[in-house]
Image (cartoon, rainbow, N blue to C red; front, side):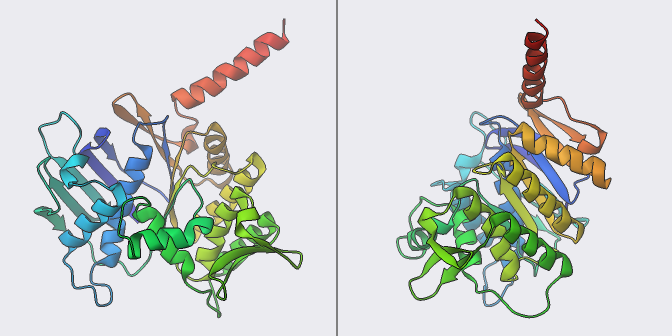
Length: 337
């Protein structure tokens, strides 16, 4: 499990230190403050540890990381990731199971990371990044853009996810919590999404009726991704899942049910990271923290700085939460006139 992370001069993030992470972790902030950047920084490091020494991949850890950063952030030179106007290099440090993975490079770096220290053993598990946009209807386009055209467009979070969901479902005994979560996901969907080998497309099956994926709602497609990753065993009880804007394309009832399922999966070992600017997501996670007694660490952007809190201790001060409270107070004020 990821225990802590330190970033300096990493894109929009000038300085960040976050420790005491839990099974469910929340990154909170308005647009452009670095929420997704933080998730991608954690994801690229985690995926580097998973690809290192896996199968016949003979690349060293530095080359894997450089390639992952290049295709995830889609920059011509890695040095472009260094915070604009800063003379000091970009630095990243992550603690995984009390072992450290760290690297740094300057603004003149092209594609070679010369300073990297790694004491973390290669991971046999799989992490995944679920972006705000769904990928099922774009599945073939994403794969083609990378595997054939080799052009920027869909970054590695999309490409990795497109490959992961393409793996076929596996039969046999699964984790009990996973099986129960899949049932809840299918009830939430009102059916299930399946890949049709014959035409290479996804479709939604409900009540013995089949619908093309293009005619299926965005919310169904998004939720079905998690169901697919549980079905094909891509995820296990030591996986790490990054979800950018879980509220995207989902109505409030679906968000609440989806996060209930996520909370159950976190109890069996999966570590989750969310990035959001939705008060509804924050409030739901806050209630889950109170109901389950589970720690939900939250880091929230505050100008150029970051504040660390835990939802067990209450809702943190943040512009998103403050605005929600302001609107409620204004509603009360108007109703009393």
